[in-house]
Structures are given as structure tokens and as C-alpha cells.
Length: 450
Image (cartoon, rainbow, N blue to C red; front, side):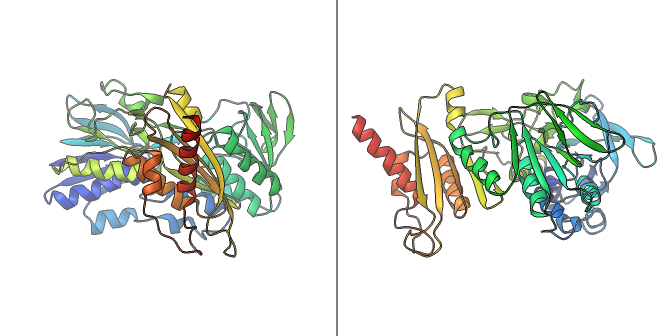
């Protein structure tokens, strides 16, 4: 059996490892547009500020390891430009030699990932204007980040925008973050995002909200960034305007796509075209709470979907159960965690909902070093099933988000949260965990209304 995989990172190589494990006769060819395989993209912001000393530290396995130790025909700088499902071939260009190639397959996996959105602003090609998605991107930023660079502007207040604002600030740069919305961290509700805003102010990061960037100006290098309201001086610009699935090459295949052009699959990672599978940031993800496909590209999901695709391609049936949208990021002294639906999302989906919000301590409040936790739970107002949780604080955020994510996976109610048997000792928790306190407050609210 000949397997061809488009993409050499998380989803693609997770699939390849399962295929060679379960099909000893497999011939596996992987086609990667870049030159680096299997690396931790989520660690890139921490190479910029030197917390991770080298981008090499992010590489899990080299191309040579896949070729020489694992027997995978791992090809670098091979850009796939088209797929022909009738002849079962993929075609493209070897970017090093310039030669075209065509490869046949018995089963094909599309794991081509996603790329940064590049706005069509004037001056987008000036020196000092960057995006961050790959190791070469990070290395260009590091090379550009000399002592002469004093003022850095980050455009976009999502995951990468916030992480990069932190990274630039921790190396002593003056940081401005421009965001077109009313608040940064749109994965959170506005009342929770206020804590992010306060942290930015505390750390000396300037937030510019409700302004749209229209142009970048300078001679050869960036000097100014223009919005629809103001003009700002800057030495470097990092654009974090979101990502888009790399799916342009599937045109004409008949493969069904959805949000942002991401590929739709069934729960076994099969597309609607026979013997073609898809996984990772180029695909849609079934959201267990929304009970519909969504597009939330995260590294954990890419690895999981890739593994499941590889198992199914090799004849080991395994179903992808879906996501709850669990995520966490670090922003200066805060951890920002979310899973499931925010209040805003529940409202958009016309789900009958209610919310509860509390401030608690991450550990026993009498134990030295306790820190405040801000928790907001969203739950259905008809059957009290948990819909989501947002947690922001200095410590203990990851534990609570993971508990809430597990609760969502198991369709628990706010009443069930109180019954959970969670670990307790004063250095680690209070006798009632903060999420249980939130659940109890919601239950008291129900009693008061009744």
C-alpha cells in the first residue's frame, strides 16, 4: 500500500508514525513545502525572547531521522499544487530544483496546515514587517531584533499577538498592540478581557483598540504604521491577523470545504472523496458542545487528528470524538484559559444559557502565596448542562480549565461539578475548588429564583 501525506508537521507526521507501526509493508511518502519537519510551532514566541535558547530545540525529529531510521520517504521543499482523484496522483514542484513532480497514491492524507493572513496593506513588503508561523519566520525576527529596534508594534490581539507582545516586552522593547476590536483576547467575553487589559497596562504595553491598520510606511524599512485614525512611529511590525487553511490546491477535486475553506471530514478523518483523508489546521473540527463543525486550529487537535487519520488509513478503525475548544496562553504574569462556549458564543448560537462569575483563590486563602482566580461559567438554563468556562489568574488556571474540559467532554451539569472528587491540601487547593464554588453560587442563584 502506498500512502502519500501532504504536510510534514504535527498532523502529517503523527499519521505517518501510525501507518508504519500498523502496516509493516507500507510505503510512505511525505511532501513538505518547507525544509523542516515535525517541530513545535507553539514554542516559537519563546525563542524570540530567548527563553528557549534555539529554534533547533523545537524540532522533535529531523528529516534525516524520518528517512534513515524510520524508512519514510520524507521530501522537503516539495510544494503540492494539485490533486487528481481520478488518476489518484498528486502533482507539484520541487522548490529546490524547480522540477515538476507527480506521485501516485493508494491513500492520501491532506495535512497541509495553515498560513498567516497577510493583509493587502501598502508597505506590507518593507523590511521589518513580520509574521510568525514557522521556524524561518522566528529566525528572521530574531535577526531583525537588534538594539536599534526600540519600538515594536503588534497588529492583532489573539493568541499569537498577545504572546508576541509579551515576548517583545520581556526583552525590553516598547510595545504597542493595535487591535481592530473593542477588546483583545476575543476568545473571552468582554468582562473577562478586562483583566488582560489591566495586565497590559501594568506591564507597560500600550493597547490601541477600535482602530484598523490601513498602511505601513517607510523608505526601505518600516518607520510608521497608519490606522484609520492615527499615525504611529515604529521600528518593527508583527502582524497577527489570524490564519487560513492551506487548501487552495484542492480546487477541482470535489472535496467539500467549510469555514474559511477548511476541509470537511467525517469522524474517521475521511473526506467525501474516496481514499482521501484530512487532518490538522487545514480541516474542520467537530465541536462537541456546539454539536457542529468549527474551525479552532490548535496543536493538540492537529496531533490527535493526525494520529486518528493514520490509524484509519492503516485499517485500525478509530473515531475522532471532537473538541471542546480547550486552550490556554501566558500573557506576562497572567494565565488565560478557556474551554467550551463563552457567553457571547452561547448567545450567537441561540442556546438558552445563564452565567456565573466569581473571584476565588487558587489555593487555600490562608496559605502563603495564594493568588486570585477569576472564573466565569456558562451553562444551559433549561437542563443546567455546562457549556463552557473561562479562567484567568496568575496560578492554577491550567488545572481548572482541564477539569472543565473533562466535564464538557462528559456532558456534565453544574450540579455534577459540585460532586467531583478533586484533590485538596492547602498548598494546592481550598477544601472547595474554585470551580465548585462557582457551581454552588450558580445553584444558589437557581434556588433564589425559584
